[in-house]
Amino acid sequence: MNANTPLAVLILAAGKGTRMKSALPKVAHKLAGLPMICHIIRTCESLGAAKIIPILAPGMDMVAQMAAPHACAIQPRQLGSGDAARAALPLLDGFNGQVVILVGDAPLIHGETIRKLAEAAKETGIAVLGMRPQNPFGYGRLVQDEKGLCTRIVEERDASAQEKAITLCNAGNFCVDAALLPALLDGLTTDNDQKEYYLTDIVALAAAKGRACAVVEAPVTEVQGINDRIQLAAAEAALQNRLREKAMRDGATLIAPETVFFSTDTVLGTDVIVEPGVFFGPDVQVGDDVIIHAYSHLEGVRVENGAHIGPFARIRPHSHIGAGVTVGNFIEVNRTHMRAGSKSKHLSYLGDADIGEKTNIGAGTVIANYDGFNKLDTKIGQNVFVGSNSTIVAPVTINDGALIAAGSTVTGDVPEDALAIARPQMNLREGRASEYRTEKQALKKKKG
Ligand code: UD1
Ligand code: MG
Image: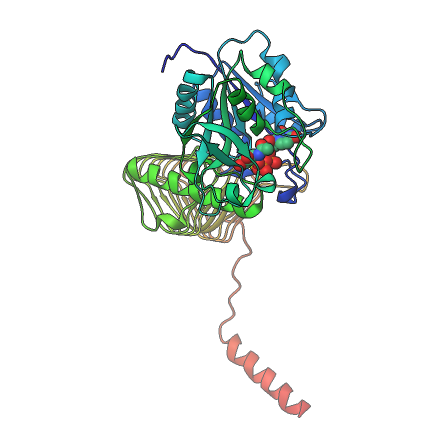
């Protein structure tokens, strides 16, 4: 393909998405942690598209923000996919090249497929993407001539029984020469069952001008539309499989890949072992030789080489886990930096803290980082030993080498190398246990 032909991409996203039964616009629903519209925008950015223009309905400000810095076109009333494409024409003014029109609800399309579509459109000026779903119900069908070129697209509800038997369906994506597009869109009518301007009718209009439409076929898992929550889940499953395979190809071991969930931006190093049931939320980067034990949930964290996480660990955003750190079972880490070699192995909450190298946090330690109004910081130096079941009431600084006795409630700074014991003293009374039992038994007898 001549890489110099500039591409503009229109993303049709103004539809009501009624079948999602949601207060959220359809394209704002997420797949692998990223809104659908952002998936498509990223793919188009990676193609080096000269213009990316999402087409939105009035009031879809949330989606406009997701699409920034790309300027969106607004379709004032939802009169159909063809009318939506028309709403973007002012933003294409003066553009010479190819216009790719994508449906906003098929976010898993590959950049390579868009390239193929653009290449195919060079011959006659127009190309459509086809697919063969197992159940074609609901999709437009591609009517082809003897050469395999598409002369017409017929929607399910407008199709004859014979047309319904066609297995090649419209995936909803087109590429059209910029010079042809305005006239084709101008020719659309609402002469169909839904009384809408169907974008699909540009194919018959082009064929009437002697420009039959080229067809590029793509796998269903890549291009199927998402119209309801069932299709959303199917697309999520397809995407997760892609991400799992990528992680494994890049050198991570997933013991039970089907149980691990990724975000699109998850990065795993080499020789990472991920046990079953691990969830990676957005913004997680993991170094080499890290083990993430079963049922851990990570988001917004950078995990350095050789760390051990979980089982049952929760790491929340703005955290940093240093090299060789252990975050053990039932540990929650939140906005916290655990520096190299530090350990927290059992049952702790560590929030808004900076924990120094080789420091050991005992079982059941809680950092009380919230006073009901503000989140407060804690600094713990290196080689500190925090005894089990301690409560560290922020804001507090525990300096290098300090020792906190088990069960302490630390409410003030602890100097370097100091021992802090902040708990009631043990009260010991020899022989008192049997005395107590005798008294209680006597009382019980008296009551009868
Ligand atoms: C559409 C195609 C159908 C194809 C299917 C693939 C048409 C007429 N039909 O059907 O041939 O098989 O996609 O998934 O295009 N939109 C607007 N403004 C509107 C109406 C729709 O922007 O006024 C947008 C929607 O947000 C969506 C796209 O256009 O991204 C397609 O609309 P949708 O209602 O999903 O059409 P389908 O019934 O899926
Ligand atoms: Mg659709």
